[in-house]
Length: 173
Image 1 (cartoon, rainbow, N blue to C red):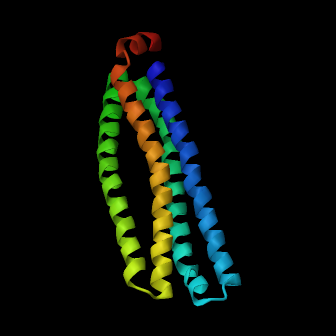
Image 2: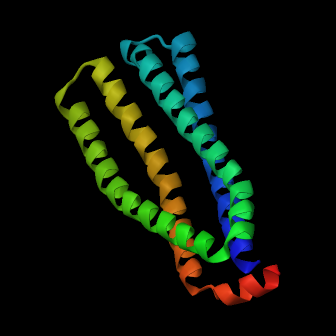
Image 3: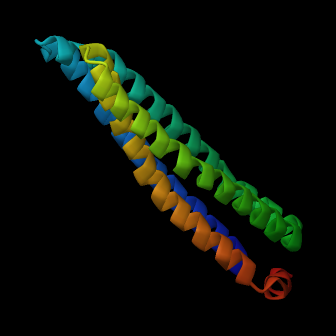
């Protein structure tokens, strides 16, 4: 049962973490509404669409991850009861795959931030400035949340490799 508890604790922590995507999405959507209602300058008006898009993207990411991880908790229990070694092996493979994806994410997102910063520097129109700044803000939110998720899945992966499967098989019976 140690493996099942480990897996469900990880999934519950992920569910909590995805709420931050939703929280920031709501902030971006409120900001968009604020710029739409209160924006007087061209730059303020230019933020309406970029913050709306960023808020929508963060909401999609947050809700998608929330429901995916929520359903994982019941899937973990079923897979664990069906075949403990296969469950552990599939989780090890899944975490290894996710860790590889994170290594790509942590290269691509900073590159996108640099591109958005250059956009702000070289294109001096309100719309492109708003797009660049909003993009940087959204990508920083993603990096913050994904940074903690990466650390969590890395620790989970290490724990999976250390767990004694035979103890869990005998305690299951």
